[in-house]
Image 1 (cartoon, rainbow, N blue to C red):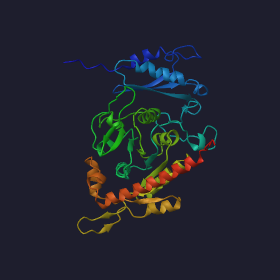
Image 2: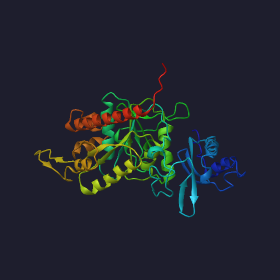
Image 3: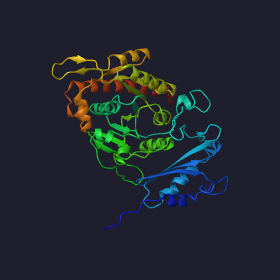
Image 4: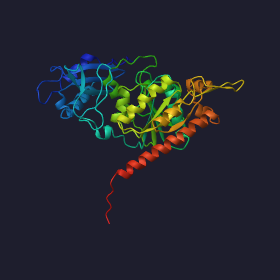
Length: 396
């Protein structure tokens, strides 16, 4: 029997990084105390480089050299270095110049508002150019337990049924659920040794941290590593040509949400909420977050809107009803539709057979397809406006 390959160790990583020297300070980055937060997970290595914020942009070649040094080690599949700067006055990591805003030790904070010094153009950066993907729509909720992931999966499948090329990205690093919902098991492979090939089922391409680690393994990562993982699942995956990518965001308004809003060219965001007041309160936070970073809110979906008894067909508004429609009117955004609380939606999602594909003729599937039509129309309209703003040079 062949002996299993020994996993790379932290000591080996540090030895490799000792060969990388700071061009200004002269010493190697390990001796200078620049390396911290080394994480090793199934051959994927991540670490932090503490740098002076004024030198951030200049040290981009150093960051790449550090990644390359680790990638040459045996049994290392990928290496990700994140540049941060430690501020003693504020007690948390600051973004290096030219880098992205993030939180240290997992505590989220907001970057500069649009128009303030250091803010990206028009409230967000064009940091990640993702070739071949025409539009990216985030599905978000500032509160957990509202059925956001179920909505994202069925929305992606409904868009695919329109004949569109669709990708689905699970950006919930701590609690990935997309693999089970789309009925995919196993790990992605790489064809060229550089980019992963996304997993596929039901005609859509998928990527999730759930494909890379066991389902019951907790991800104990700090904010910078979460953001780097999300960026890698966008940048280092061979998505090919897509009409639209649906991104299932984790609940809240923290690192993952800010990474997507400020580092990814989002076409827009869809907010999922249940009708009760406590969920709508958090939905408002999500709307305001996206607006502060100039991401258009395409509309609000009311999930678990009502319950229809399967025996007597009586309609019961368990979580109230119509709250999302009222919030949409209040924020002058579109109300995209309502989805009932139904056992079939939950069961099909748990079984990896989402209702849009397992029961395509059901009224629930029709509701998802109607919402998908609205989302696609609004995304197309936004893309059209953006293209009109680009000056065209005509040579006669």
